[in-house]
Image 1 (cartoon, rainbow, N blue to C red):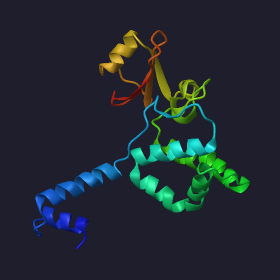
Image 2 (image 1 turned 180 degrees about the vertical axis):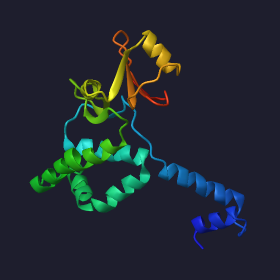
Image 3 (image 1 turned 30 degrees about the vertical axis):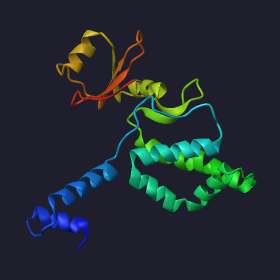
Length: 198
């Protein structure tokens, strides 16, 4: 019987699997299969625009936030990983470079953006060279214009009432914009739960 099968049997009282073994396995499942999200301001790579450096940093980030996704990439993109390793070892093959460019800027970029919170993205910082997870202020502005996000100014009565749970909104998200300290926050509209602050 597999370990997961043994644990189910243990929970049903049908096996003698030890408590320590069950706890270790449950901790591993929680660690490996909990989807983590990138917080705004998470720096992935800085000071280089080389696709091989960015791909390596993207893979490291994916390994730290979602091990199963990382393992699937290693399996599904083995040719790209091999090309990346050859480039990192000093190889100069143009086909390898094209493959790594596409892998970093299209494949991994698309995958890693799935681990972003609402109205954030992975890429170069607006107006900067740092590659990481950033707030999409432009996306938020469009969402406010389209009626998908409610916007309050930080320090306003509306922002205070909303954050205290005393003001209802009809949108799925609320953006509290702080133009003095430049610390914005995004909240769930119905639950008044903060999603991110940056």
